[in-house]
Amino acid sequence: MIVSPHLVRNFFFIIPIGLIIAATDVTVAHHSIVPFDQNTFIELDGVVSEILWRNPHVRLKMRIQNDAGEEEEWELEGDSANATARRGLTRDSMRVGNRIRVAGNPSIREHRELLLTNILMPNGEEYLATERPRPWRWTEGRAGATSPDTSSEPSIFHVWSFEEAHRPREPFVFTPAAQAARAAWDPFTDMLALRCIAPGMPNAILNPYPIEFIDEGTYIRVRIEQWQATRLIDMVSEQIPEDAPSSPLGYSIGRWEGETLIVETTQIDFPYLDDAGTPMSADVEMTERFTLSENGTRLDYEIMVTDPLNLAEPAVEDAAWRWVPGTEISPYECIPEQIEF
Image (cartoon, rainbow, N blue to C red; front, top):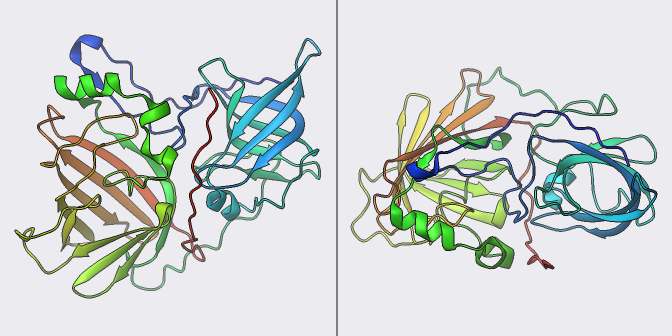
């Protein structure tokens, strides 16, 4: 076994307990229940013993020989099958019995689990197993995607690829009620994604997969690859209609402010704010800002969440997408996780 620790950027926050403050871990795979050490990379050499190619996560098992000469079996978790396919890695890229080298973040639970970032195949080809930006480790990689044609007028109406994971500007400040709910929440039994229950806002859009904006005149349609979700943004109403129905995605109205699309959403009927068990009330309000870069190749995102029942002050997060020509929204089929404890 080869183990090579490398320091990487840490998105965790160190919080005084007495302040009742916490932050969502935004670097772990979006629906993973395994906490991974984002400060450490390790490499493993071994033989593929099992392949499970699916959404929401590709999973592999591999047998390695440890430093004591003993055989160990490791469980490896990558992004969704859709995400790896965009990187050129598909279910036909490897077979049980292949000897491969992998790199990624190990579990902090002292289990033999790894969040995959890189895979080196027997033929010397390297693949990235994540849609998150990550460097090549053993090769120079492949030729990059086609550069966008910036000669036309910049527009938000494209398919946008993931660029930067959502990050809180400041640690969220929870009310005592929310803190108690978070403490009682068990990811192994309570995380809805394990049962393929699609999230509501804001998690519906805070994921590392493509989204598409379509101009339909009175509405802007937002297609989200993950969970095959669709949002409609009312571009006519100046305020949320009194008879607006409640739904997991809520009711959204939008307006333009220069090159920035501002979206206000209420009527959200979903129990959680995030993947950490933070409760969300029916009174929650969200304001989003989608800002197009000057050359039209980057879309910066800001969301402010106000929920006095659960948040002692508004919570703000930032993210970004990039325009990669040729990217398409792919079908998304979730298969419920089968977790062994």
